[in-house]
Length: 247
Image (cartoon, rainbow, N blue to C red; front, side):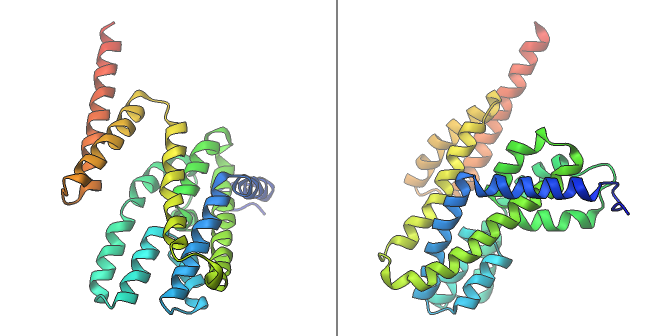
């Protein structure tokens, strides 16, 4: 009997396995592994248990937010302040969720079927699904996204445990350096995938505006960078469309 969406079991399996293969051969497999080895070492340094560290990766699945949580707990910061900081850090994932859902959902997709892929959403999962997803039949896309998410999440959980046990053999600054790989890989992936003029403009302006605001110690520099660069990029896009229509 077919699932309620009308998607055959075969197509779901094919999409899921393709997602697993895509994730396993992606550069993000290396990025996730190194990043979470660093996170596991960080948890060990702060005296957290290996079970807590691995559960954090499985449930929270957001490197920067996890680092905020661990360092906050280790420093004795109030729980409400940690919660606010983690929440603000994770707001960055909302736009990519909004961008991804229209790509993977079908006409008969139920809301509950989107819970799992939404949980798996991370920069890595988003990049790979947006890259491969449009070329797949729509009925394969949720399964594909889940395959990517399951594979990378599993790698992250395992790497967390490995890093926890390797902590004694790792350099002191390894954790911080490993966590830095994630934003760099995201920047490179976005730069390679930028096709529209507004995407290129927004990315270029972001690289200029962000450091300028940070050097001038402007509060909420990342937020202002996104607002300014994104708005100007969209303005260039509208101007380009107006010129095309006029001609």
